[in-house]
Structures are given as structure tokens and as C-alpha cells.
Amino acid sequence: RSPLHLSSRDDDWLGNTRARSRSPLHLSSKDDDWNLGDEDDSRLDEMRQILESSWNGEAMGQVPSDSGKAAEACSQAVANAMRQNRNVLMVDLRLPSFDTTEGPRAYDSFGVYDFCSHLSRHLKQLSLVTKTLILFRNDLEVKHIEQEKLIRGDGDSDDLNDTANPGRQLQNDVDDFRDQLMANWDDESANPVPSVAPSGEPTPLASDNSSHRLGSMIGEAEISPGPDQFDQTIQAVDQHALLQGEEDALIIVAPYDTTDTVALRRTLARYGNTRTIIIVNSRIELLPRELDNAVMCYGILPLIARRGHNDPDAGLKAVVLKRYPDPWTVYVDVDDDGFYEAKGGPMSPVDSSDKQLPSPEWIALKVQAFLQKQ
Image (cartoon, rainbow, N blue to C red; front, side, top):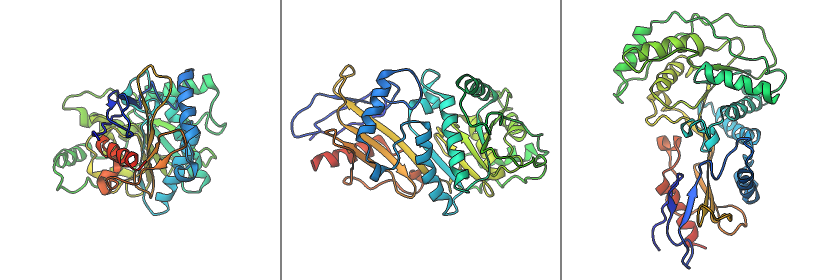
């Protein structure tokens, strides 16, 4: 049989998926096939229903058919890691409405916030955290989310007024941190950046019953791409990305560029050894060494093959799923009789490679090994 080519973009799955010949299958996980947002699109609802009808709850856990259910499924995996004393955790939802690199047409910051707020509530209900600071990139995103909350009337009553309240800037030596950051940026043999002393944090606030506070990493700061980028980012993070009161966990949303990387490293240096940090949908290509001890808790990539872009009938379906402590696993549904684990093919990624989605080649080999046994 010919090799099975796989991509989560707009490429094709080519090759024979059965002994009999089939026409090329178009495969995509982009917004034309799957989305967890609330857009008024009957086709998206149809695709969601297709995956729900095939979902194997016993093997795959809760079906992430909306933000709340996705958070419930994720919280179980996060809880498993936290109970094993892992405190730097990663979540990767390969869904267009959750992926900031998909652009404003597909990306739904409110949907991501809804997921994060549900996740914080689940973790609080499990007595694993007291209160979580949810950090988006900047205040522009936060304002958009607040506007959406008012329009939709979403959110629990104890969270509706729980918005960003930046603390005062820490009096840390920015130049010293910048020198350390630059010194070991590309040197993998260098020691990690030391933790930033927590002295100078805002005075603890009174206790409340809310599960989270919404904030941003850099506030309204304008970060230049030039030589001042490091200093400007660090100063902004020191002013905005600070825990207050009972907050003992952070959720950092969708870091992807150099500014985000500097901000993430600064935050990990400050809280990485003492607090729970959950990074949702990182798109940083080269993960910083501060994430060496991080674990991927929950990840999902749904894939649906079609014979053509205009074909209304779904063909082969696959889901790449990670639920801590289990490794990355591929589930396949060929004939609409439910997802089954693809147990053949190459071994699952482990160690550092476990932090990122498996390669398309690995997924294709898993699917092909499964089909060969049919």
C-alpha cells in the first residue's frame, strides 16, 4: 500500500485506506471542519455531532463538545499531574477557535476564556487550587472578553466583577534579569534563570469565593521589536502578571512570539517553583528551558477525512488525544461504529517530545497500522 500522508492543514490524505482503491481524502482540522466556538454555523454543529456520535467515552473520557466539557475533561488530567506534585503543566487544544495563530476569523478569545474559567472552577472544587489568575496577552483581549461577558451574560456571579487589577511594579533588577536571559537564551548547557524573589508583591487582598481573576501579561504596554523589547516586556510583566491575595495558580493563554517567550520565562522564574502554572495552547516553536520539567496534561487534535471539500459525508475520522498520565494516543473510526485505539505502529512520543503534538508522520503511521489490521 502507498504511504498515508497526513496533515492537519488543507493537504490531502492520499493512499488506500482499504484493500479497495479510494479517491483522495481531504483532511483538515481548520475552521471548515471543527470548532468549539459558539458561531452560528450549522455545518460546524454537524461536524461536532459527527464526532460526538463516534466518541468512546470509556476509552477517551469526556467528549470536549463545548468549552465547559473540554475543561471538565482537561481538569481530570491536570488533577492527575498535580497529585503527583507536578506544578508546571501544559494543555494543547488543536481547535481553530482556540488557536491564536488562526487569526481573528477563527480565534475566539471569549471561548478560550470560558474554557479557562471552567478549568479554574473545577480545580477549585477539587481543592487543588484556591484561586487562579488567568492571563491573556494584553488588556485589549481582556477588554474584548469583558464586553462579551456583558453581551452574553455569561459567567458565574462571583466572577463577573473579578477583572484585572494590576499590582504595583516590583522593584527587581531588570537589567540583571535581562543579562541572565540573554546569556542563556541559546546556550542549552547554561543553568536556568534563577527564580525571581517574590518580595514586593502587592499586599494580600481579602478572601473571596471567586475561582479566578482575569488579567493580562503586559497590560497596555507597547512592546517594540528592537533592542528595548526585553526591558519593556519585563517591566510590563512585573507590573501586571502578579498574583494577589489567595491566588496560588496561573493560567497563561497562547504564548507564541518573542515577547510572549520573554514574558513566560519571567513568570516561570518568579513562580515556577512555588505555584501551579498551566500554559494553554503554547505556540512557541522552541520551548524555553524553564519548561524542561513541564508535563503535557491534556491535548486533542480531531481529524476528519473527506473524499472532497464539497462532499457532505465524513469519511475516516481520527482523534489524537493526550490525557495525563497516558501517552499520546490515536483513535480511529472508519465505518461510523465508534472510535477505537490505534495500537499498532510506532511507539508514542515520550520525555521532551511529549510536550508537543506528535508529528503528522507519526499520526499517519498509527492510522495506517490500524487500517492494515481491518
